[in-house]
Figure 1 (cartoon, one colour):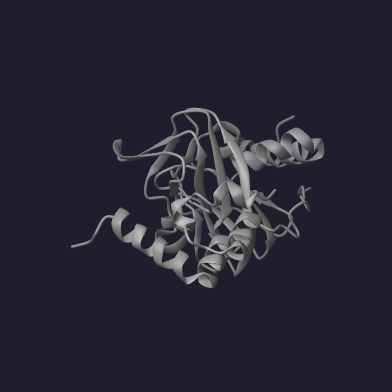
Figure 2 (cartoon, rainbow over the protein chains, first blue to last red):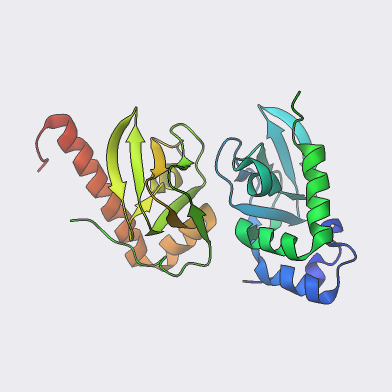
Length: 133
Length: 125
């Protein structure tokens, strides 16, 4: 079920982490293959998994508007796990893709154990989530 | 008769849902089904209680079968532990565990039968 750590060493979110930390992360990641057009996240729905793109790509939309395109090394799905409980955007694969998926509770535990990971996730959330007021 | 699915008793993808929390709401997109490990989930449609689902029961399977939005609210009636099964795992289970597919069909048949009974006031033949 787990992923080799060499596959995730180049992911910017995990940059600079030690082998022990990378191993702990890789152990909890599941390798998945997705065809173009698969919804990995559906806006408004429940979200229990966090995703990193290994190969391929995906488009992120909210209310039908394209917010971002994701490629290898990009991650998504963290908002529902850490803040919103619901998916804040729809993410759809645009190519045959390799995806690394992690169950949200496992990811939250790892982020609690690895402060730099938590800081990077927090920074991404501050940038990605709509600001109130 | 109520079909129990015990495949998820020791599931590694389990979440704790506090009493009163909505697992999902009518009309939402659905990407997961849930196996009740402990506790209880109430299925509520337009404010009417449709069903209570306890340990061994499943909820949310319809959205995975036909890609439709959720057809009712699912509310935890007590502190509840749920196994989370996403589409990928659901398809894997259906492909690799024929008894799982039959159990899901059995649950859906029970719910359809109950819906028909509620509509017509009698049991379908």
